[in-house]
Length: 99
Image 1: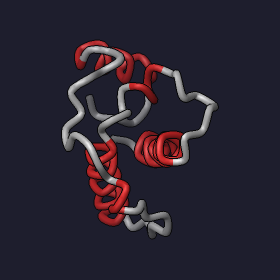
Image 2 (image 1 turned 120 degrees about the vertical axis):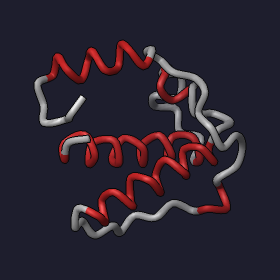
Image 3 (image 1 turned 180 degrees about the vertical axis):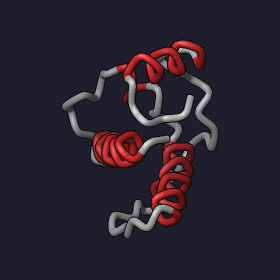
């Protein structure tokens, strides 16, 4: 994953976490938000994987998530786009991701 997507996903993950854990109304019914409801454990684990990768790249992380809120399923099994479509989208963006 290129730098832009790593940091972008981390930022978006925090937005999703905030919407779900604080019961915010904005984007509450967006498909990307809905697929994470009941899967805060999976979202937390994805965050930890991103933080680990950020550390490997020399970034300092200062925005931990509360593990006490990491409930529900530990695996994300619902996707807005298929894996194949996600790969195609990344290739079309022309970023530095090696797909």
